[in-house]
Image (cartoon, rainbow, N blue to C red; front, side, top):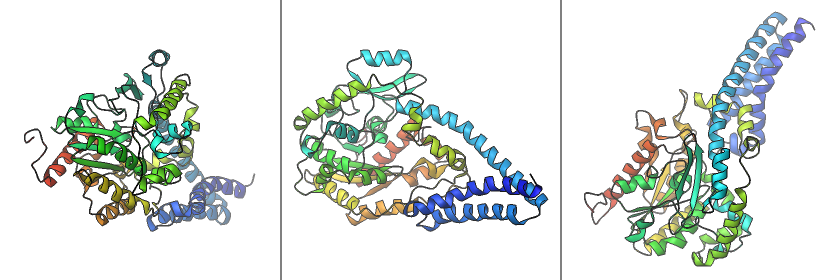
Length: 443
């Protein structure tokens, strides 16, 4: 091999790798290149660097191209070694999120007929063949032990209340001050009993119920409000919007015909009684899943771990260079908020939106709010257009001296985060309340 060929080879490896980013971004233009910060991050900068390195390999003197290519390849190798180190730690967190069990824990799950693994409502409705909103499963399973995740300390779970949610059953013995609608952030993912968001709100003196299940998006939450709102008649309904995945969840939900019915003014949301057959089918499906252990191979089939490794996501995240997908227009979101407000005001309640920023905003020396804020503006503008107040937790979390302490390694709230968010919710609701604050001192 000549010096010219050697220089070209060592330049080609990092150069071609850098060019993968603009190629992928341009192939998925609306998601990764349609806005200026994303175009600069995913197309312009890596494209120029990759082209420059390949040009050096082709045109520069052999000795110089070999030095540049060797240095660039060495840096790339170091980045992948750094990525591999962090991927190992991330893999263990992902397996805990999926609910991987030890042999002893798996045997306990199989023997306990009243314990079920974690689930999503969309997944169970799809497997159960749901095609009508009134018969849809829109809650968990009453009085059932639900696995949230696993940890080094064992299984983290909760006993569902009479409606199938993560609350003490006696919370319904008096009228609710607050109903929290949402996904895993509201359900209390991987937080021990008493440390989740709703528990922290109750500790602040309000009667609050979590009406949240992992995987929920705004449209499912509207349907849940339609079914349980009139039954529980809370003084305040708070719909929690999670920046990390709710916009994508909504996009998937809108493709489900029976779920779109939730937007209709005369929608029949059904009752728990009308969903009993679906609930029995869904519970049978979950019982069957007890015999399907979570394996390490599931990291490749059920997560994006391999793709993220190739993209050096962990490394770039620690620099603050992971930008979210571009949030396209979804006019149905404003309709969801409008309908949710109408439902809530029908019994004299108030409706508020809570905005939860994703953890990535606060990671790394190069992190910036700019790439994340277009979605935040879309959500806030939709709420403002319908006269709905917004509790913007971005401002609260950004004001903390160490914002990352409010998040757990799995990117959900930490116990500290749940307490701070609960305090902000109580403060905001008390400030808007006309018949006196709802704190323990004033109830």
